[in-house]
Length: 291
Ligand code: ZN
Image (cartoon, rainbow, N blue to C red):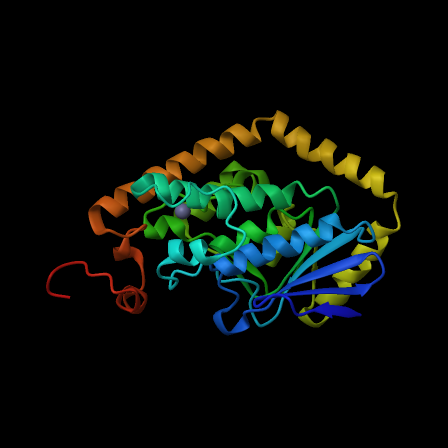
């Protein structure tokens, strides 16, 4: 096996010929995603996509939990992005207000997740522990999902005054009825429920997760690379023909409206009254003058 150390938060390795494994490696924060983390993950996906010797990509995570979502503790995230070499198609940092927020989220949230969904090679997510909010935006773009029996999937954003994560794929994953329950209640979907609903392909014991992903990857890697690419295009294209892309854009714009609303009221992207008090204090958000 070869492993790369070019990233701070991501491990890129090739456990065997034809298979790349991209591992989230910020376990001390339950793999919270800040700006650097997402650019590194995108660079790792690009590397696997551009390497003709790689036929299947596994996305895995070190630590107890797959991902706790976006790193709310990241302050000055625009400055962090400005420092980053691969700044991409952002608005050039001259914009402000809702325009700036929307440009940022279009690139590193919705944009990256859509890009990863359309990588022309099969991708397999191997998920353990908690997968919360932004965590879903890493696993849902993958073609196949294998979960350990301790995995759970949660989008609690309605509790924070925002109607779902930026990659609004809930109903394409679990159907409209369950998507509403998931969002309206902020309740976690267990691995067993996710399997029953067709969101997850397999559930395995925690200690067998890595091997199960490899077994699946080997099986897929043995097939024609071109046939796999065409099949992926056909199925993703069918979802898009059903209106997926337009529905995603609509949800994204409503999501921006919510951010704008809370920024105006509290100078914060979400409803801070829905955040745990410790988080609110750590972020220095004051609900009133007495705090
Ligand atoms: Zn957002």
